[in-house]
Image 1 (cartoon, rainbow, N blue to C red):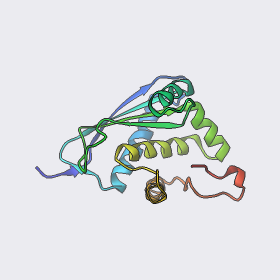
Image 2 (cartoon, helix red, strand yellow):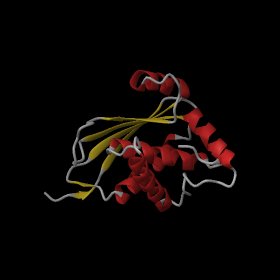
Image 3 (cartoon, helix red, strand yellow):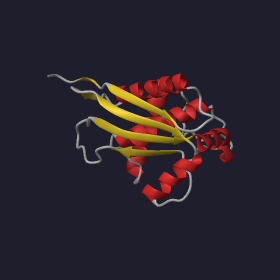
Image 4 (spheres, one colour):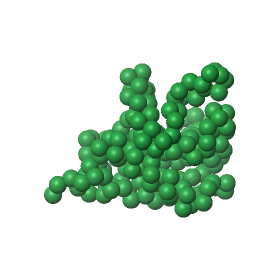
Length: 172
């Protein structure tokens, strides 16, 4: 059986108030997943699954403390279903968890639309599930380059571009 463009079945969970309606979140996630798959030319003979949970700072703080030893909220966490999947696409990619309050604060601080920042973080989380990382400078450069290309394909400005005001420059 030949490989086809990657088909991703998405399971959304909205666990906290204040998020856009589920149809809008589904559209944003689908569009982002398709852009990531296209940019990376992902192909597979079988579909894969992705879970995306929209939560709040309190919930993500607990997850961050439990899984990363950091007792503070963060914008996005990724939990790969098969951390050592090798080069193939596993039957389930894993889960992306996003915190609304942190994403809203960061978007406001950076002067960017909420949906642009959310799209960036979904792409960022998905790249982690696909084995990308930013622990070294080379890894960060490669991952950020992929993010820039993905977001550009969605007509979203470079999230890493420095603004004229260093106080509003995007932070990594």
